[in-house]
Image 1 (cartoon, helix red, strand yellow):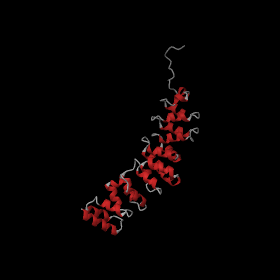
Image 2 (cartoon, helix red, strand yellow):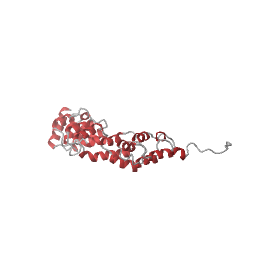
Image 3 (cartoon, helix red, strand yellow):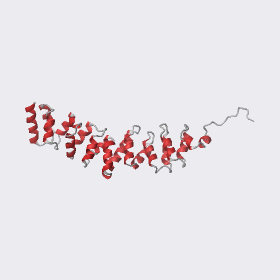
Image 4 (cartoon, one colour):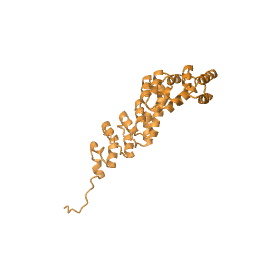
Length: 255
């Protein structure tokens, strides 16, 4: 007979939470319920993705999802797991390296992914650039992170290089660093004609320091500097001596 003094089993005991249907367990606040759901071989892709949308998941739950053999080969789950802010690095790093081209791009652009995981995604993509199709490289040049766009500035296809220059993550510093590379002849020509980048003063300085700049563009840029500043720039320029002398003469004449 219950006299009202006997202790009742807590509503969130292990026995109760383990019996929760998966549809309810993935929304539970109980750690044991979440661990059980994550390890359950009956956990479907849709339920796993719903679970992975939760920002409050303990790292142990994310590890259990990674170990769940039912989910290990499912691309959407792998992407969501690699992109989760709380996924342990020993789980996320190997996962990132398994992702396909555009999933890597998504990881690198995600605002919630930790910086070191984004860097790994970018480095993995860069290592694959020589093996992916021109169409894929073109999409990456337009949409990927700044690191990827920089890597594509020296692409052998002009349209890919031009798309990288238009990438919203491209910065003036990236352009300056890239045009100064010895192999950047095509890029120097493209940047010197570009409506946006050719107007930037630091970019003009970098272009005047390369050996690949045409005389016509060099003359146009040289007019934007005082004789003293132009002489300073040309001291570290790889332009031929005759062109340097001509730039200085024209600059003095028009100043």
